[in-house]
Image (tube, rainbow, N blue to C red; front, side, top):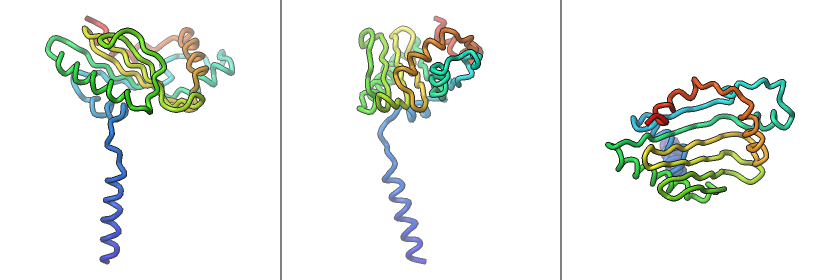
Length: 179
């Protein structure tokens, strides 16, 4: 009996110690999904409304590598400027983690965008787009998939141009865009 209690306590302690408490985008999304200043969306590939029979093999492969997109947007206004700065700083700190490899950056620190990824050049697990504008807020977009690579992403962008996007899934973002 004593050995069983000791073993259970040891297992519980090891489980608690093995949990990483470092910040990640996934944790950040979960923590802020219900915050009134944020808009959170999960978007599936079905938003594209594509006729899969008309896609080339390369386009089908690119589409199949894409699982979903998570969007978390903070709408800035006159009453939440301090929280906006705090939250924007948190996201920037998370993206400085070496696991988020920055591909490119546009604009300045106050306004602009960055594109990062997690994984290797040939096996990208997620792409992250972080865009911010002092007057309106910021958005973090996580494009999640399996075996994505830069060619798949470029092909997916060309497929997006041909798609008939289901705007109903994007309705919650309208309030962020409206000024």
